[in-house]
Image (cartoon, rainbow, N blue to C red; front, side, top):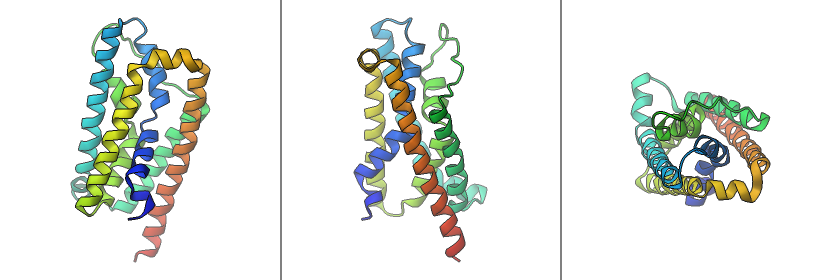
Length: 201
């Protein structure tokens, strides 16, 4: 089994794709008016929705490719490009405007989609699902995805403590480092798509 297909590799890849430090800063800002029990409820619902959405994207990617008539390598190039722009936004410090959190449930929208699972993450998950050809690969990918989602989600439960420990500036630095990791991952996805497209014929 190639190193990039190991459980640890999948875990690390998905963990950074979920941009946990950026989401943590958004979560702290959007739940600062809530009680501890309310914050925990939002964190739990966000983690559960992230898990369900990620697994649905992973397992139903191949049928989507066939339905739309898109090759996997073409999707690699497109998804990698979108992911690169996501990485650029993190590195440059761009943050979306925070919606009004006084009314409505924020766990699925916007915390899960689009903050945690944006276009770049969606594309990467679809590519992963389309690339896995054996049951063993799918089992490793699934366990890696689930573990990464649970790790990122568990950070939300101690979000205020983490912010107090490292500060808002510390979270911003970690978000920028996450952006660098995503930029490298995006480049790898794009180059793999281009190489396969040019030399597989």
